[in-house]
Length: 250
Image 1 (cartoon, one colour):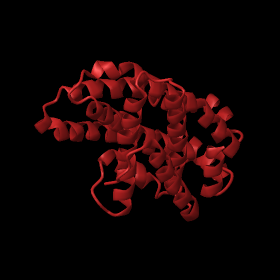
Image 2 (cartoon, helix red, strand yellow):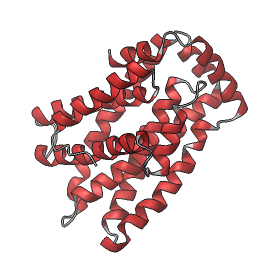
Image 3 (cartoon, one colour):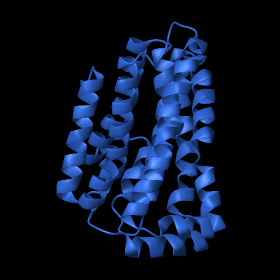
Image 4 (tube, helix red, strand yellow):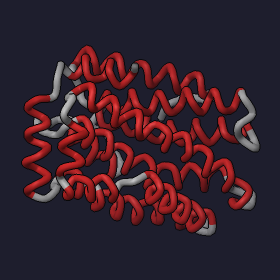
């Protein structure tokens, strides 16, 4: 388990993951680079008074980020990891998945599972509804990066957006993983988890993990048309893993 306690330490640790991924051409770095952007935006929001409770938001961000960082380190060390993260990290071992798939499968694990857990943990002994406004705001930060990611992907392969618009199956695929759906599901899970007795807490997380991991199959085992289109995109994605990560960081 990591000993991270501040948002600056989160940013530094994510930078370590990004740099390690670039050196090793590890596609896991795609999600880490996106997540670092999110964390920097959250830090700026805290400094600018964007959230109702800045100190609480930093604690939430740290708890949230540690679930990803701990999962990443555990996977690399062949230690137990939630199934949702295993699906994401396993995908990084394959050649064919495109950048978008790596990002979506990471978002699936982190938002649909980890965010709800973090929200429930930060609200222990308190009314979780007090967190709702800031919970929506942090999701607003996440949503604001969606268009940026699409632009980044277009720079990695310029015809990406045209193909996505042309292929309705891929449009449906993206809609299934919209930020709004992820946000609502994460909040419902957070509320349910906050009402769960302490002795049943981990079991509730395990049950949720299984559901979230099944959702990831839409990403890793999509329909035949989507697979063909993604295969074409993969063949023409420009640059090495390290170069693509740099584009995502810009």
